[in-house]
Length: 457
Ligand code: HEM
Image 1 (cartoon, helix red, strand yellow):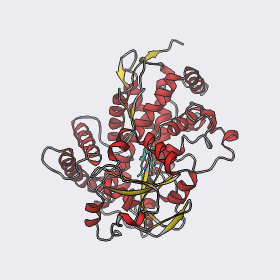
Image 2 (cartoon, protein in one colour):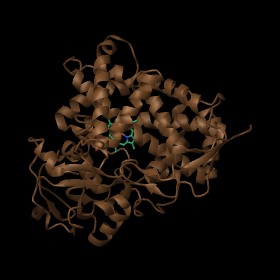
Image 3 (cartoon, rainbow, N blue to C red):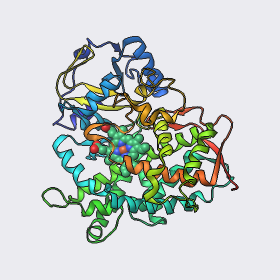
Image 4 (cartoon, rainbow, N blue to C red):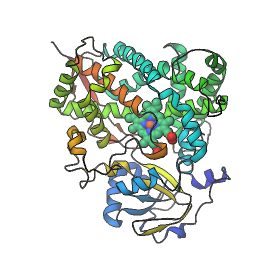
């Protein structure tokens, strides 16, 4: 991450610490110029395991253009994410990665301003709009999934395309067609830019394409806002346009644009990644497919979908989804920046340090998750959850920035699974999903080749 560059562009941020300030914390600077970046990119969790084995649960790492201090385990997650003393900035943690393409989204805000905007946006996540999204998702998923019988496919690619189409309707209120397709393309370019290694928008780079895409989307949102403010649309965009703050004032047009842009990014690859890992794990554990199918069939209605009012009854499906999120969390590590000096694990960590916590590492710690590599959804039953540290499972983060879309994500996955498992048996290709690219959001390198085989009842 180009720490120095980003700090220069944000004068209200703390200045960059000289490296010597972290010298009491054990760790490695890695190779000249790139530090440990290549090793982290190759396999972030293998790198973390090696560092923890060598230095313990607090270590210094030099990657992506700067030093950061990594804190490992549930206590670290609680300290940094729950942040009861307001010591950690999300804006200054995520900013170096996201500010160029997704500025001023919720994760790029701190404290009072963040609280106020989050509250305003929360109307779009209330039960009534959720019911509306559920209906839209149900119809959209049924339309696509119905045509998946016996078709060899790479599931990751299919579910990514499906999620984009679903977002056009439930996020933007735009019917599928040429405009939705252009929006989807622009949006994919933006996300690509946010994770590209070249951070300057030079001609021909994904950063340049991403910034152009952003211009297109900003223009689209701005053009639509007046009509959406006066309309009755139930999609996220229309809700944000009509939302008012504590003083009864609507959000400014620029703020709506930034929040929409960010929301689409936050929702998209995370849902795609977690749907893919769940399907892979169910493909490998046929008995769990059966159990989930049984649960779905026990709800009665046999048209493939599940009414919104019954989604909460898919308890085993929820456990299985939680277990997939444990094994393959879509946001494997979470960055922050310390605004004040603090201590953890016997180390003094100075203000201005970039700090990271590691959900993926925590989710595989045998002291919190016995037999951690085994797919065992019943770990999430109330009996077996008893006594577990509340920050041992943090795929959605925790504290003030905890994922605002977690119920939406859970709902979409339940609806998708209901449509898939009632119709089909998952048949993975030999060796499917063996290797995953972990960074920035996990995806199987082979796209998860499989077939959905229709079930004869
Ligand atoms: C399985 C799917 C998802 C996962 C694993 C996930 C994960 C996360 C995590 C870990 C954070 C907190 C990051 C931090 O503390 O720095 C977060 C924040 C956020 N997520 Fe999600 N997310 C998912 C789906 C969604 C969806 C569907 C939406 C929108 C409908 C969404 C919108 C957001 C937003 C707006 C934030 C920022 C919240 C804030 O800063 O107050 N996410 N998500």
